[in-house]
Length: 159
Image (cartoon, rainbow, N blue to C red):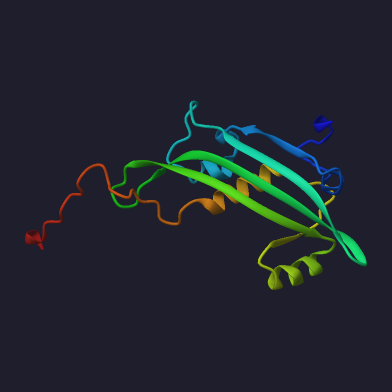
């Protein structure tokens, strides 16, 4: 039954109503926006392993809440901003999203909640959402804990 949901255009309400889980892997090279932030994306680059599960949570006296749990992990190559050498960085995401009807309701609830609240779309692209979350998981300033080679010392005698 899992084949009835297309992760690139998932009918989110039906998916959450089913309580189903989808999982798989996508090549990093297929995530152009993520690849643009990386030092390299080679043919042997590790794939992005992902899983998404949907759930409807009952609410007393109201419409059930629509929830999506998304996890993903991969290893990327970044450029260390200290020594300018490539470095390996593990990326992991584990996010829960609540979906509500209407952009106004989503904005209002998102401000008041620690959870991510988004407008319920007719179809959701899990690939794009996963890529967005991996981009957000990138370090702002990638650096080795200890750079593999000593950094060159600046010579102030020529100033």
